[in-house]
Image (tube, rainbow, N blue to C red; front, side, top):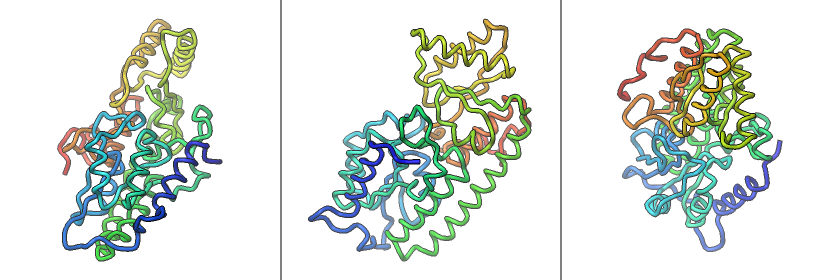
Length: 331
């Protein structure tokens, strides 16, 4: 596998910035004083929640993108830029997920901020490179909790560089969180396997679930970008209708960050072909749930998705999810 030209250029520019251009201080030479909590800015909620789990009470973490926000299209505001420039450290997903933030991240790095991609340790041989991505890796790694665990290692190492005095605390937090990710992955494997094999087809509005599909052996079909007004769009919708009919799939899914229009067109097409298809639920793809809820955490987000998919496709999973917390306030 290889990094596409844009990905390579963007990554190289940020790495050069972090490595320090002439006249800026090397970011890793001095640790931040541990006399007060330091400030960390994360791009997405998933990145922010992971950083928050490791940093504990030694730092304050702000995520720029909240519930319902599409990171692919997100452009930083003036307030976002100010937060980036004043942060002790910045963590972002990488793999071009935040493509429209590249200039802002480079600007923060060249100003001496510590700017880190949490996916930087991922083995490229384990990254997905769908043909439609034109040489770029699929950035939605968080859909596989086991793969996402590698980001904890990056966060841990960078926090220790930032604040050596907190190493013991960070290591303990990272170990606890990694174990929680392992338990979440085990739950997902167990309940998703209860779905009848012929029904293990996940149809969504957006192609964010490829890592999920690979990890849990589900066929994943996203229809993001299909226009029902064009001839090609109609043909593509019909191909998905044929799939639903042939596999007798009774549920498709909408997403919290994507319009449901294409999914509704798909349901109508299936109905016209004699296949009853319902919306199995709303999944969290590029953003977590509402702040203050269990679904507003990374663990809760994945628990919700796994439980919703399992129940909608005919499998067995507790209504309240792995810990019985779905639909409730965050602990």
